[in-house]
Length: 251
Image (cartoon, rainbow, N blue to C red):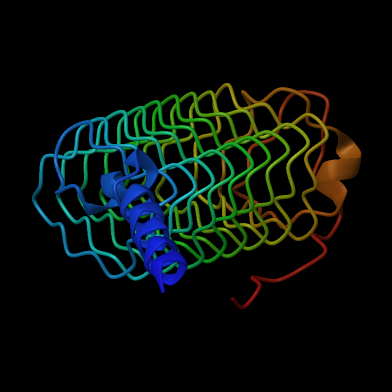
C-alpha cells in the first residue's frame, strides 16, 4: 500500500513538473509584444488590431487565424503554418516567414516592407496591394497568388515559383526575377525598369503592353515563348516573333 501511495505521489510530481515547464507554460501566455509562442498550437486565433510587435511564432500552428490590422513588425513566423490565415492591413515589416506554409493566406494591403518569405510555400495566397519593397521571396512557392497593385520595388523573387501569378498594376522596379518560373504569369502593362530576368522561364508569360526596354538578362529565346503584343517594348537587339505564340491565357 505504501509503495502504491509513493508511486502516485511521484506520478503527480512528474505531471506537475511537466505542466509547469517553460515550454508548456509559454503557450498559455496572453498575446502581446515579444511573447514567445514558438512551437505552440494556436489555430483559429482572433487577434485583430493587436500590438504583437516582435512576437515569436516559430514552428507554430496558426491556421484559420485572424491578425487583420495588427502590429507584427519583426515577428518571427519561420516554419509556421498560416494556411487560410488573415493578415489584411497588418504591419509585418521585417517579419520572418522563412519556410512557412501558408496556402490561401490573405496578406491584402499588409506592410511587408523588408519581410522575408525565403523558401516559404504561399501558393494561391493574396498579396494584392501589399507594400513589399525590399522583401525577400527567393525560392518561395507562390503559384497562382495575387500581387496585383503591390509595391515590390527592389524585391528578391529569384528562383521563385510564380506560375500564373497576377502582377497587374504592380510596381516592380528593380525586382530580381532571375531563374524564377514566370510561366503564364501576368506582367502585362508593367514598367519593368531595372528588372533582372536572367534565366527566368517565360513560357506563355503575359507581356502585352509591358515595357521591357530597361530589363537585364533577357534573351531572344525567352521572348519567343512569351506572349506579347504590338505595344510590348523590348530591349535593344531583341525583336518580337513574327507572330506571338499565344493569345491571352485563361486563369
